[in-house]
Length: 426
Image: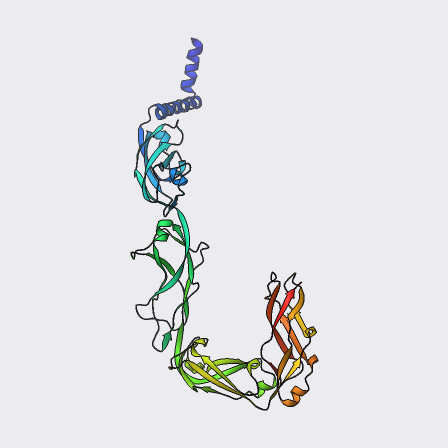
């Protein structure tokens, strides 16, 4: 008894020991209140993901897939002891919500009932309600088709500023691949590349297009994917500065002496009213170049060329004509032929593994044009025949390629005509 009294006396009068005992007692009281007497609370778990599993369902057997929205979430209200559910969120994954897919047996929009359950049966809380009892999901079989693409260019304030004209917009591709639910894809009547101009243009510009598929009733088809590789379709709107300038031609592959003494020519009409691309100020432009004539197309005397106006690059002719006539005079020249052996042909830029076997047909003879004395002095050894194999087909046993023919150490002669060569691969 004395020992107990002594311990009681020490406990009462020893402040440090009294503090330790009080702390232990407080912990026991807190645990008792928290676990046994904790009040019941209600918590809402926000944005709990909905599981949609088609495995072993009728939908899977019929080849049905989900199109459109696939990531659904709901809010789940739960109740339980505060110490159990107080810190729970959707990230806790204590609750799983599953869409019931067993009644999906055909294409179209289906309303799927939702069922919520505890992820672990022994968790001490109950599910009270869901923010929604069902979701609408679109099911169909997958299909893909190619459709021709048209342009829908909207320009409320006009396409061009004053002093400029345009021509037909240019698509980056003529066909577009459309994939998605069979019902929607099969209903498509037209597919358009839509571009809307915010203001009139003064320069050619390329836009990323919005692709819109319209069905036979004029509505918009949904749940579609355009171009599985996600490539962007562009629309280029050509813009031309309107001007009127003299017409002219240029020459290519000209012998050196004709750079300092160009050939004379005439162009009919001598001037044109036209739109020109890539020019912001018409003062920068002196003439309209309507042709780039190759010396390989020129023979002695008078050479005539008719150039369709719709073949001009970067020029849109406004003058009411279908073609432009060019006459090129080649004076004081003659033509002569030279027969060439197959051994005169050389090959360059062969693809790896490509070996030339034999010539099926080579260059029998070439036509040379130039001043009489210069032509007379040209021998077979002066003529170089080269075939560029960089674009040859390694899988072709036989193919025809163009030969490039030049004349060595001559500044006033050229080779007239084109010369295809047919060769066999080893």
